[in-house]
Length: 95
Image (cartoon, rainbow, N blue to C red; front, top):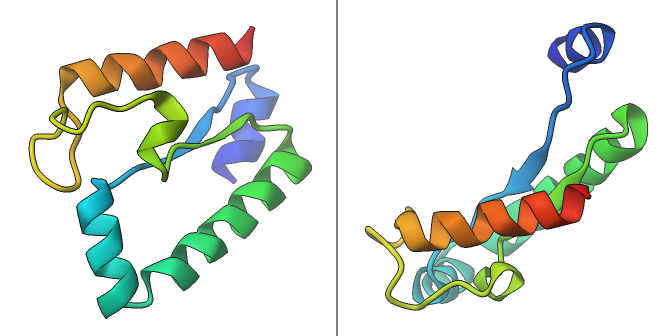
């Protein structure tokens, strides 16, 4: 409903898959079903892109936006520098 209403109201939705620090990703991959959940997220995002023409950016791998290893407030939240890098990639990708 949200996506349909946004399209009706000429609001552009942009979706991006958030990253975790590479060390956290490695831990999650070995100890949880993180890899499977990430793949499910990618499949769902692809469907949204197809069905609603939503730009999708997969930043689950921090290399996708040239993240700095030190640019994290913790293992799941990026700092201002890495946030700027994400924003720059999104802006460039939307042009």
